[in-house]
Image (cartoon, rainbow, N blue to C red):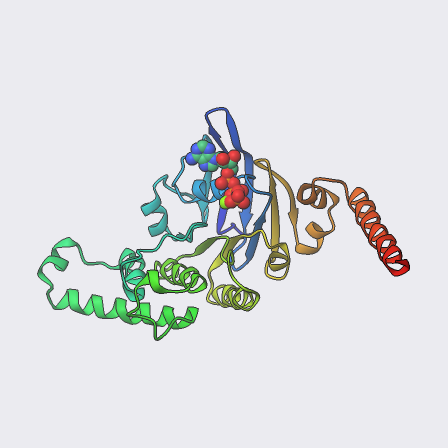
Amino acid sequence: MSTPVLEARDVSMVFGGLKALKNVSLQLEEGKILGLIGPNGAGKTTFFNCLTGLYTPTTGSVLLKGTTLPGDPAKVTTAGVARTFQNIRLFPSMTVLENVLVGRHVRMKQGPLASLFHGPAYRKGENAAKERSRELLEFVGLSGLEDELARNLPYGDQRRLEIARALATDPAVLLLDEPTAGMNPQETEAARQLIFAIRETGVSVVVIEHDIKFIFGLCDQVSVLVQGELLVEGTPDVVRGDPRVVEAYLGKPPDEVEAEVASVVEEQQHRGAQEGQA
Ligand SMILES: Nc1ncnc2c1ncn2[C@@H]1O[C@H](COP(=O)(O)OP(=O)(O)OP(=O)(O)O)[C@@H](O)[C@H]1O
Ligand SMILES: [Mg+2]
């Protein structure tokens, strides 16, 4: 098997007495979309924070293309891992274009002196960065909105802008934390198509989502995290059919859930019959 583009080895994270992650190992193959699902508080965002150097895992390591990543968010971005946040983190008083440029600056070669003197090399670099940022805005479906303030965008567009900013850093891996939260069905479908398009450009993706229908229709592989532990992993078909997944999501074994549904249906039918008689 080829080296995974991103690999977590036995990552654990302890907060005080709480074990938020327990020896989580995960491999993302190049060119794939991996879904990470699990109930609230399962440790999904904590896992992203460990992958991106925001948290230093209590144990374990994270590797990009076989090389251990530094435990520093800026260095992780430069190494090629970009992310979006569950609670959108844009610069609300900056324009849409400026927000993407912030991501682009990670890849710009000029040092701080060049930007102080604004010489020709600086201007050339800035123009190239703007051009690339505009391309990315078009790619995510936000062209024409370059000069709007980020805070004036509708929620779904803000999520797309965050993706454009992440892509501006030229990542090998993109981590998306609940990219469709708060979106309507049309926006969710557009987000799904966008993530496919991102994969087409050669970027490998990990997506956290609660909408499991969305996840099963998007991902090549799915990993299920429950109470900090990786419970099940596999293709969408394997994961969907695993009784432990149903139990983790609904809190009960599948046969109990079925029995409960049957009793509700029966009760409704009974009530309907009584109303018919009245
Ligand atoms: N900085 C922190 N300090 C202490 N506890 C934390 C910290 N970050 C997360 N936790 C705890 O770790 C556990 C996992 O939280 P996390 O946010 O990773 O879950 P999640 O799977 O992303 O949930 P959700 O689906 O609700 O976003 C929770 O019990 C949370 O309270
Ligand atoms: Mg979360």
